[in-house]
Length: 241
Image (cartoon, rainbow, N blue to C red; front, side):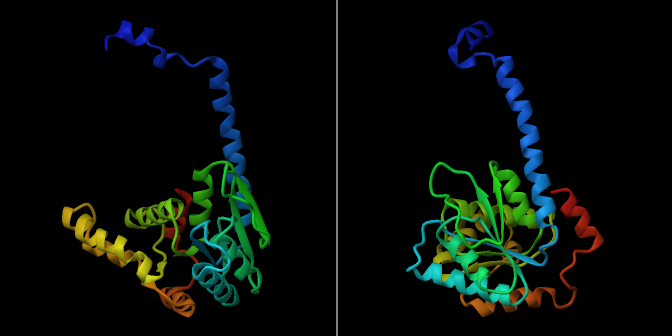
């Protein structure tokens, strides 16, 4: 396509000044989300971010498992962070709400599925996925990932990438329910490792567990020699998130 044709094509209409001004002002909205997140979450450590399907009903075993894990973590002294919505997110907040540590919801405004659950001691609201994702990582001592869909996989890929590339501190990443994750892990090994797109050593970035107490024990085991506070080097990494 030559330059004249490109200029005349309706798909290449120029952006008007009003649209540009609106885009520029979005920066302040994004800044506000980060500032509120930092101010309200800086004191919740140690905390565990937990993910899972928004579609799991209270009668589903995954919902019940999530509630048990969150309660166990809350009773063990961890603030518990979820996406604040229904399904496993609700189960997580409900379990933590019944424990002795704060239950935190990082809510996202969506046209469907995301309805804020009632079990939140601290509730933040985000318009932008990327600022919300930073908050999940920045103060997390561990990631616990239960069965879920695209959003759950997105969060899992995010933390694996950040730890693999050393953009954040190494934290426990725990996949819950071996049966659910077995197909994906087989694909990791048989395709990604075989094709050289990840290394076999990357399997050491996470572990797969089934029981609530196993999750709690794995997190404490990771920190027993070093404590929960990040080192000076790790703090620098977290500043660059």
